Image (cartoon, rainbow, N blue to C red; front, side, top):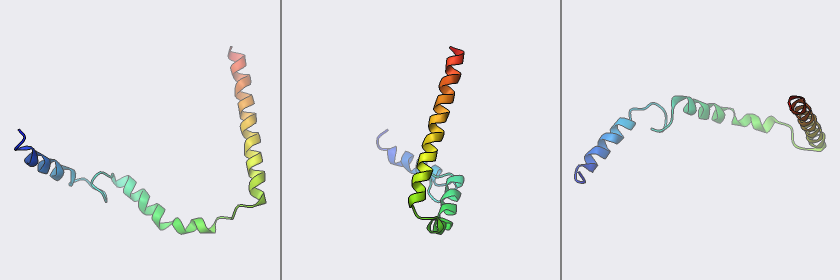
Length: 80
């Protein structure tokens, strides 16, 4: 069996190389996603820079999270 392992390996590689995609292990959807990200990577430069407004966004997001936690605690209390 050990002598025939190279033939088996060669056959296995031939089977995997028939897949579609850039790399033999990738699916076409993941390749398309990488192409889209590569094409539109320049749009990240157009986003606004961090500043004082980011502090307000963080505080607002924190308040929303606390309100959601309180809501779910109240709903859990009603069930118990």
